[in-house]
Amino acid sequence: MVRYFMLWAPFFKSNFFLQLVDLSAAQDIEAGDGTTSVVVLAGSLLGAAERMLDKGIHPTIVAESFLKASAKAVEYLTEISTPVDLNDRESLLRAATTSLNSKVR
Image 1 (cartoon, rainbow, N blue to C red):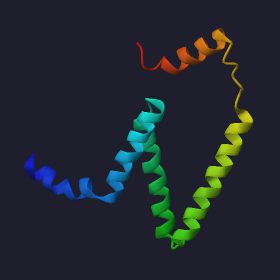
Image 2: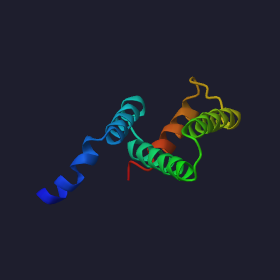
Image 3: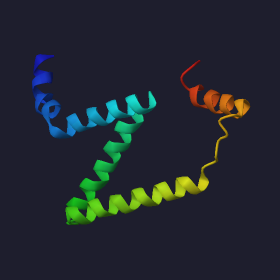
């Protein structure tokens, strides 16, 4: 076990790992859930960035592309979102039940 930890110790001290921990903690504070999803999504984005860098694409272009994709995603999610009336108890209960369905079984 000690050998295993020593092998991975540099990773646990890396800036990347610490940023993932911070990202996960921020998600937990903000939403109280979704920390695993955030780390998986961040890992996937980093993998995509690494593949682009391996193809010789400049890091600035990669970063700008992610910013453009993020803006487009927000635009799309705004278009498909449904306004919620905070006085509509029935809709709020349905939303809460849907959100908690995977957690309470």
